[in-house]
Image (tube, rainbow, N blue to C red; front, side, top):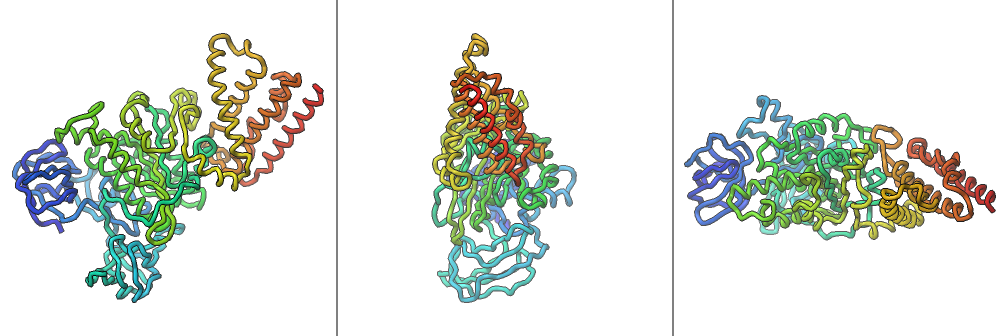
Length: 590
């Protein structure tokens, strides 16, 4: 309970409040300000004064108003009932608030993050007398038809299990077990536990990143893959498709759980997410996508302090499910708005600004966030991961601004969005020239095992062609394409074919919206084969026009629409027809 006064308001500066007469307080302590009980967090202590950032509108707060301390850090409630829920930046359930408030969220409103009345069917797996370490599984709750919620001993607790309830239905506040700790104390355990959002949850060890997070988007999986437990940045100017790309990844990726953080984005964008996600069908299960999604909605008109906290709220939820042995993907949209919140709060605390007004500790904050990703062996012995896909919104699409540059220091996968591609309606608008992935070498073994050894060679050859095309395009701008020999014009033709038939995807087409890795590898091999055999044919006297007039050429262009994921025999037939056509052309010019 929050009932003790730890100080009184001295000065109000927007969401930042200076508190005087501080007694018995600690850093990052959860506080309530004034008689309206506004939620805040103590972020700076100095002698008998402190700085509190408030997560609500501070209008009406006056000097000498009381500040109440909670005796604990700002924490989130972790337990059954999180999946499918829409929270704000400090884990207040928005749908529950809407049921008891007016159009807008009332100041000081307090609603439990997890439903206190709903009963969950708990199946114990531990037994009385067992010695349990932190993170051990006590039992399970079938939260959704496809996700088994594993109830864990809090990471900081260990001891001997004195008692545990039988299988049955319980609320998150009912005691399900009693643990006798190593200090000789008894502690009640519940379906729910709390964890401070700014503290990383412990794990046994960090694992190498060798398994890709399959997204079904060919430009990502084939050219710039990300590992499960990896970190990605998606920078791009306004209208280049950051939110669209993240939503496509959220829908199609093979993560067990999605945490979508709308951090400081426009209200209409967040509304689109809230309206569309419940309607989307998870292609793996055939059920609503919300059954594996947690949404954190913190729009640009909400208090700036809550925007700063929303990132940590989302990553803490993701770590909790990782500790159960699940693979979680976080969509942070966007970290630029989070950095702007840091800048505003830093300015109100009168700290010395660094480049472009951002605080000097911006790189540290970005590093702390992305370092909480990774593939881990959890304390329960299972392997889980947290992958972070963070959008960056550089003003004017300038990738040299501080947030983009500092983010590049701490991530290993970079999906740069290109405005020219977006304007040409080429989606996903990920530039194949500016993007990169440092996970490629570690995952080559997985790809070769799943699709065959030719994948890496095909990818390397295609990437070399794309870079050669850039140099040729500079010549074309000066003298035109007709001045080039057929061998060089063929490079331009193959690259155009690869962009249109492979890299570009139609999210509204039932077949093309998602591609399995097997289909991706076969498609890329067919285009690489067309290049290899076509180059030989040109050397033997064939013309570029003859290569383009082959009937199989049109089949290659349409293969992404014509061949379904569950029957790739069509691609084998196209490859066989391509080989026959090339053999006939070679025989013609022999």
